[in-house]
Length: 172
Image (cartoon, rainbow, N blue to C red; front, side, top):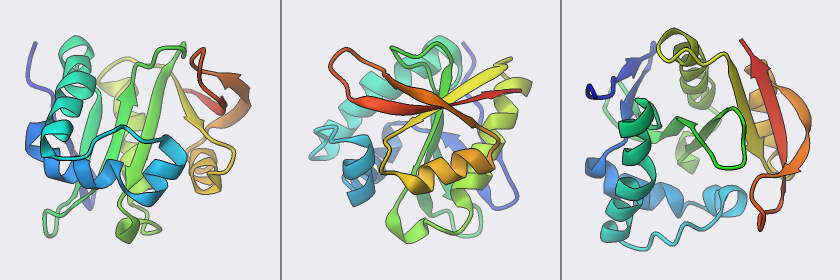
């Protein structure tokens, strides 16, 4: 398989997440909103972050050509957050997801990166239907999904053990 592509928006680079992002991923997955709304991934040090990337992100890139992208601001090359297209167990459609470090929220980066991934889902990967999941308490995520054109379709358990999540859908 070819090396996964990097994508650009006006202000951002969306680069395939790799083990070189381990320190950033360690910080992101332990940020307060990640822990509250996404959940603890038991990533406690750089080695855990490398293993997380190698076991959860790299295999999907190898299998499908897309997965999680590290969102980098072009002007200074600061890593702001992540945005990705995920083939999740328990979901029929590909899931779009995003998370940003607290200091980079509310600046339009999540919309800009997710909107770009929404476009490339069709143009690069032929994905016509996307979904997104979120917990009921995550109002910011719900509002962003609506702004991106997703419609709430109901709640469902994504995994047998999991909590019921809100599911949003988009047909392109």
